[in-house]
Every structure is written in C-alpha cells, then in structure tokens.
Amino acid sequence: MSPPRTPHAVPAAPARAAQYIRMSTDHQEYSPLFQREAIARYAAANNIRLVRDYEDSGISGLTLRERPALIQLLLDVEDPARRFSCVLVYDVSRWGRFQDVDESAFYEYACRRAGVRVIYVAEPFENDGSPLSSVMKAMKRAMAGEFSREMSRKVFLGHCLNVRRGFHTGGPVGYGLRRVLVNAGREVLQPLAIHEYKNVQTDRVIVVPDPSGEAAIIRKMFEWYATQPVTGAGIAQRLNDFGIVNGAGRSWQGRNIMQILRNEKYIGTNVYSRTTSKLDGPWQQLPQNEWIRVPDAFSPVVDRRLFATVQKRIEDSRRRPTREEITDGMRKVLSRNGRISQKLLKHYRRAPSAEQVAHEFGSLNEAYKAIGYVPNLDPERSENRFVERRVEQRVAHSAMDRLRELGHEVRYEKHTAVLCVDGALRIQLVVRRPWMIQAHLPYWTARWPDCFAIDFLVYGRIERAGTELLDFHVLPRGSLKAGEFTVVFRDGRSHFEPYRHDDLKALIALTDSVPLDVLSADPGCAAR
Image: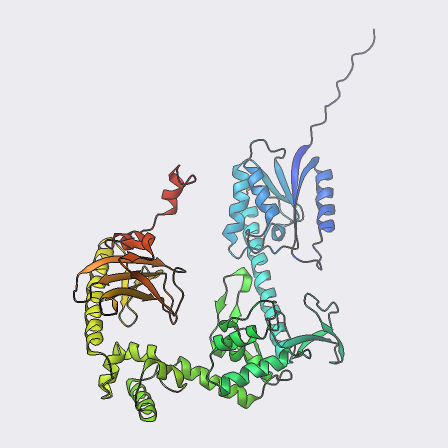
C-alpha cells in the first residue's frame, strides 16, 4: 500500500495593480525608466502583477488640470469593471507637488474609497492608514510642495540675474527686434529664428534691432506720432495701405501701434517681471515699483528724446483736461478761425476733442455759451434739437425705470445718450425729428457712432412739429455704417422695416438673459 500524498500549497494569485509614472522635465533623476524599474522590483517582491500603465511625461505636478494620465486613473478607479486593486507610485512627490497638501490627500482618498490602495514603493513607511504613515505622508506632501516653491524662487532669482546682465530671459521680443545667440564670453554665435532656442547651458540670448527693415518701420511710427496729428489707428491704417503686415503676418491694429509706442525695449531698456504667475497661479499685473528695469541692456531702435516726446503726448492724450483748459482751447480755435465747430475741434491736435467738450459741458451748445460764442445756426433746427433731447431723456428715464423693476443694473451716459445694462449691453437711444425735402417731404436719418462702441441703436421718430413718438427702430451692430448718415424712413415707408417696432418692448426683450441651467433643462433648446 502506497503512502498517502502530502497536499502541496497552492500559490496565491498575484494582485493586479496599475502603475502611475510622472516626470516634470527631461533632465532629472526621476526618469520614467528609473521609476519603472523600482516599481517592477517592488511588484516582483510582493507578488503583484502590473496590468495598467499611466504616465504623465514632462508635466508639472503642481495641479491636476494638465495631467491627463492621473485624471484618467481617477476616472478608471471609479469604474466597477476596472482590472486592478492597487496603484503603485514611486514616491509621494510623483503623486503630486500640490501646494495644498489636502488636495494630494483627497485624490488618494478617492482611490481608497473606491477600494483601490495607493502604494509608494520608494518610501520608508508602509501606506497602511496607521497614524505613523498619515504623519509621514503629510510631512512628505508638505516637503514636496515646499520643493516646488523653493525651485520657483531660485528660477526667478536666476532670471533676474540674467536680466540685470543684459540677457533675454524668454518670450517673444516683438516687432523690429531679433534674438541673437552668444556664448559665455558674449561672442555672437548666430541669430535665432522663431522656435529656435539655445541648447548649451552656458550660452545666452541677447536682443538686437532687426536688420531687415522692421527697425526702420518702428522708427517711422515714433516719428509720425511725435510730429503729426495722427493716432495709433491712423498709423495702423497707413501701414496697411502700404501693404506692410505685422510680425504675425496680419494687418495692423491701433492697439498694436500703441503697445509699441509705450514699450521701453525700443530704447534699449530691458523690462522684466511686469506680470507673474508663480506655481501655476493666475496671472497678475505687478505694480511698476516691482518691475526690473535695466537701461541700455541692448542697442536702442529709437532715440531717447524721440521716445520721451511720444510718451508725453500719450500721457497728454490720456489725461482728462480741466474745464478751464477746454474753454481756453476753444477760445484759441475761435480766435484763429472766427468760428468754432466740431469739425474744427477735430482739425487741431491741441484743441479739446468734441467728446471731451460734451463730457464736460453736456453738449457743444452749452460749451459755446460758456465762452460767449453764438453759433450761426438755423433757429428752427436749434428748437428741434432741444425737443429731441427732451424726449430722449424722457424715454431714457422711462426705459431705465422699467429695466430696474426687472432687476437690471442700468447706467445712463448723458453725453452719449447710451444706456449701459448690467455692465455688458450698451444701447444708444436717440430721438429725431425729420428733415424736409422741398419743405413738405419728411425723411429721418440715423448715424451709427464711430467714436465709442455700442451694441444697438434705438432710433425713435417724432413728427416735425410734435413731441409724440411714432415708432422705434432697434438697429443692431452692422446694420449701419459707422460715422455715416443713413436714411431710415422716407416716402411713408421704412428702409429698415424688420427692425421697426411700435414701442420699447423689443428693447426690454434685448436685455433679458436666460440662465444656462434653464437652457440645458429645456429639451427644445437644441432644436431651436
């Protein structure tokens, strides 16, 4: 009789695990290969089988927002059909360098709540939920966040040092300037094209005027603005008429010109740290006393005296003149021409603008009275304008009262006749009597403003000798050409009939807003 067989122990099935790999740059000790090897050794020693792989390569650990692999891992953890029961990570810092240690703990807790354990294979403690492991993890998380803060501070100080030595620290240099690569001894190596960067640690980048002709165009911009009665938009129009495009290959805009005219880099001053966004925080504008300015850091494009002249003119244009300065300017125009008008005010660069006059006095006529000037106007037309303004204000106040009853915040700009609703919608409200053809054929004209922005023009009509409103035209942006008079109503019919309304209910409807949750709850919204 054979002896009974001794039963052999059945080896336990290996636990299934996913591994998470993160490396923030390509030059550091935490390479993906290094992390994989450490995780593989731990898995082999602890009877763990790796079935899923998540990797964020070249991504900072400061936030979750730009880490697609970790986001996918957290989503898969909540899936009951997942194929793993634990996640292997090299250490606490690879899980993240969150500035709030509770954020890192929250993501780990989300895994544990779903039945998935997070294991840090290179840490000297067991992540078993004991008080010791909790204290060690909290300390490690704080150290990981502090490491990022310290590195950020060192990088910023290094950039500041390079700026003070006259080097370029990154970002586009702007139109009219070029980047040049130099070695440690400031010997020129080569110019850098767009998307070209240094690849030797000791090399540096300096900025020089562009030799292809862009620098000459920059100088011409400054000369035009300093010596001619032209605005940034006027300079942009000139360049576009010449067929000259900006650095991005697009047409010039007035704001592009003004940004160039205000920038100190065109006189060779290197300005750094105007804005900041440390540790992936929101961008913030820093006060000027915190900027780093290095004069004569590189060769200037324009002369300092020309630059100073331009800055003075920009400052003068931005400063609101006093009432005395406005009246003095109007008197000078009057003494030179014997008369004064909106066109003459626009002609003289040093004269106050019609907008400034209207803002200070409410209208040109009130300003004329202040300087003792009696314009040679048609008395009937002056009376018509007086009636129009009175009805405009009556309609504006009626509309404001109704909008405020509906919960809107409304502000009325008297000098432009604009209703600003909820800080977002701008509506100009005008009322006009008609002009007459051969003294018996009335027609009404409207003008879309070209010196300030509006979204809608609400145009009310009244009879020649009356004050009762006939109807309204609610004209959207684009329906009229800015700055030009357009016939709205003539020969008993409207040229803009689709926009005509008997009352201001259409204006009230324009200001109504529908919350997004209401839209999403309405099954017919998609069809509409």
